[in-house]
Image (cartoon, rainbow, N blue to C red):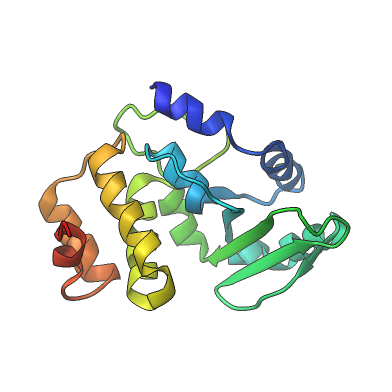
Length: 184
């Protein structure tokens, strides 16, 4: 429990206020990326704030980010935003998913993990995202591989090995389970 409390105490204040502003506008967000990794039990450094947002709210979210002084710098499955007024301000990434996927990502883990102060993707969704990134981006492989290994070892949630094998096959393809479990 202490690790959970400590990891969320580190979330930048602007992340809380950004979530609150989105909530006031009726735009749902789930914390993802490095801060979600911290919530689920593995504290590590992260230099941006990643959120999952339903694609059905994409236009409203982009308009709100513009109103808040952020410029969109990338297109695609995710959009990266940079603060126009403060260049040292961390990037904010919005990862677009369909409404059904968002609902699944928002489901509680159901294992007694405390409710975070900011809505956060569940453990299985985080593993799935990390596995997908491992499959598709060679530059990120080392970081995502370590995140997966440490989440499985130190995370608050435990999943059966067979279920993890299934996640590996579905999101990262053949050989991923062996890659994650290789200890060198």
